Image (tube, rainbow, N blue to C red):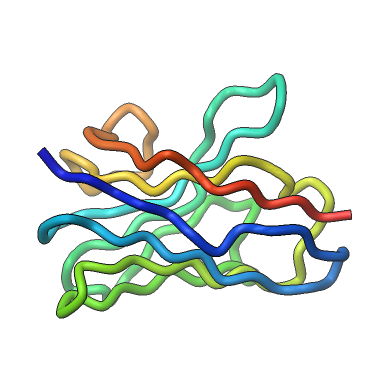
Amino acid sequence: HVQLVESGGGSVQAGGSLKLTCEASSSVYCMGWFRQAPGKERAEVGIIDSDGRSPTYADSVKGRFTISRDNTKNTLYLQMNSLKPEDTAMYYCAALSRCTLWVGYASYWGQGTQVTVS
């Protein structure tokens, strides 16, 4: 059982940046970020495996968001730049059973951190 704890959310103006952090209780091969806006289903943001060489992103965040990880700290990051109001959502960190960009492969979830862009 993996425990995941996100931090770093907040409120920012459009065009601004935020960096989210997810601390895992143990090492995880594949980790990802997902988000859920009010009234919408949880959606993929991006995933990264333990090598960290080829993250995969949803089209909506490509070129603006960057996923990285520090395996020595069991920590996952999400750098979000050029934020838009439509990026407003609760952001969740997840450990995936398979390293494919699909919410259905998430095995463990964090509690989420809110990002609001105005």
